[in-house]
Amino acid sequence: MEALVHTFPPVSTSGIIFSAISFREPPRIRSNK
Image (cartoon, rainbow, N blue to C red; front, side, top):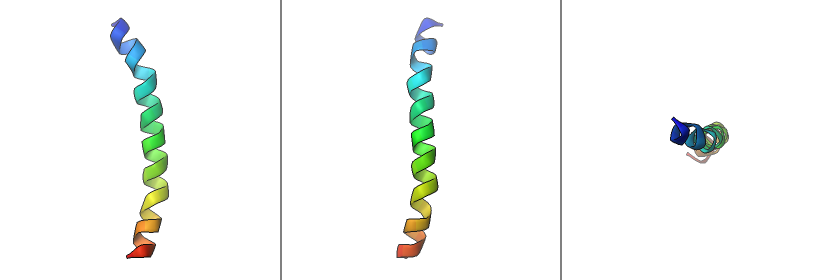
């Protein structure tokens, strides 16, 4: 249980960063194509 608690914050932050990048990138890719 402690391992999940310690690994959860980094995963959530990486997920937020990944979602932000995914929302910012697609328009650029579409505009380039």
